[in-house]
Every structure is written in C-alpha cells, then in structure tokens.
Image (cartoon, rainbow, N blue to C red; front, side, top):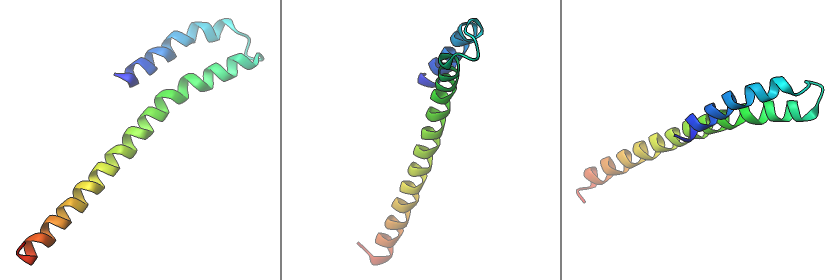
Length: 71
C-alpha cells in the first residue's frame, strides 16, 4: 500500500516538474526524491524477504539438530 502511494506521488509530481525550470534546484531535488522513495521501499522489502529466508533456514537447521539429539 505504501509503495502504491509512492508511485502515485511520482505521477502527481510529473506536471509539477514540467512547470518548474530544470535549471531550478527544486526541480532536481523533487525529481530525485520522488523516485527514491519507491526505490527505497522496494530495496527494504527485498532485504526483509532475505532476512526472513535466513531466519527460516536457520530455524530449520536448528530444528534438525534438535531432532538428531533426541531432545
């Protein structure tokens, strides 16, 4: 849901960016900021998925070790 709002923000910024001169620092800053938000969300989502997979793997290994010890 947050990612979709970030994409909508990019769409909302497009007409605004067209109305501001590219030489204006605000144009560059708004353009970079609007695209970095969804990219950061996607990057964090990927990192969390990897962390979850690592935890599941580690949990599975620990469970196998417990089974082998008879506990």
